[in-house]
Length: 71
Image (cartoon, rainbow, N blue to C red; front, side, top):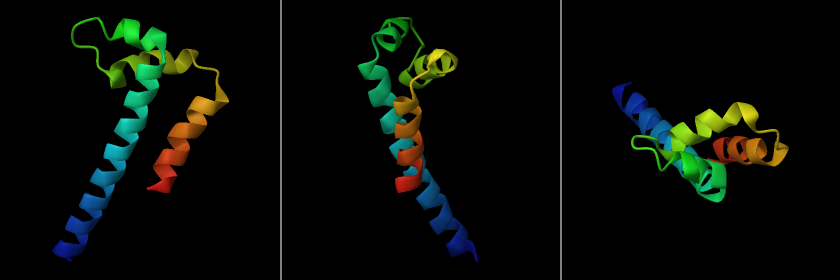
């Protein structure tokens, strides 16, 4: 049973890594996020989180959800 849990943890860790890459790339593609990331301590994840409520693009939310399901 422990091995099964370890395998599941490794799978979820890999999924999170892939999602982190997608979020980071989206932040690098967004000039608003780049500007936020000039503030010390603001990473791509933080910048994306701050900008998420103002995002109305269906394409960006589709990229994240497809990345989450494709792994």
